[in-house]
Length: 397
Image (cartoon, rainbow, N blue to C red; front, side):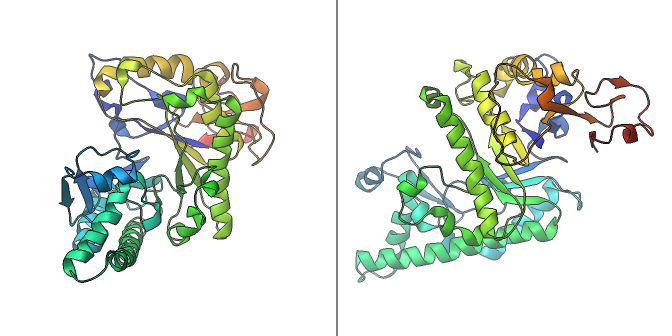
């Protein structure tokens, strides 16, 4: 299982700040710890093509649908056409091509390439809460074009246009990426979208609604973020949440008859947007997010954080990484490699020991640029011809 560093901690490389060194724990890290690099690339909305979206005051994902319709002071600004049915697709793809070639100059790049488009979802019925604005504006757009039409008919036409163009926009964008960089693991952030209770909320599961999308991607990038409010949950609910996320991703691939990577977005901070709270994952939350998901057999984890006030967070992130997050590497791999579970069969019965790191459960991956090798990265000397003495040893190339 690979672990990637997607924390924009380049400011922490400044000599006046506490350095952050995830690579010493075997975490794949871009040069200068940027979002774009040789290990992993994340495209945000303004970094890939001409993504259409709406800007409006008081945006909050939890906004009640009714509040949007009743809010007479809502000011909506259309960016790049605002709605997917208004975009010039050729212009978008031309810019996206240049953006991809610039961000990924290596044609043989084979790492995660994630498109993080979050303003709207490419299926009408999945745009709830604040995203319902895309439904309202689509209906309004039809009414303005055809003043004599009923609102019900306008909504149906708006739905059809939105779904058709959103799907076209999404599919053509991912196909362009696969064409330009075919070895990369292309996918969209937060897919599959559903949670373990999704089947109780919608008569048709949203996994089925996005089958066409899963046919196009080469990896699934689900999110298993924990938030401050999750601390009220019992541990079993956390494990249930993680299990559901992994299970739905595997189920998605099984339906598509594909065996492709499942890579999860996770964090270390409960709320990176409020650095003053300094809330990091507890050991139990680490176990639930990292070791539990590893035992479920995922192919990778991406450690993400916000760039907000990152300069002020360098010290606390570094301390946490070295004192809490990295001890397995320190204790078992002598600080020279990354811990991996010996038995990573999917659906095996997990061990419950988040307060310690049992040596018999783990082995190590040692970087090639180190002068140590062996099961626990504890054997010094030249590496030549010695890997064959340790057939079970896995090495980062």
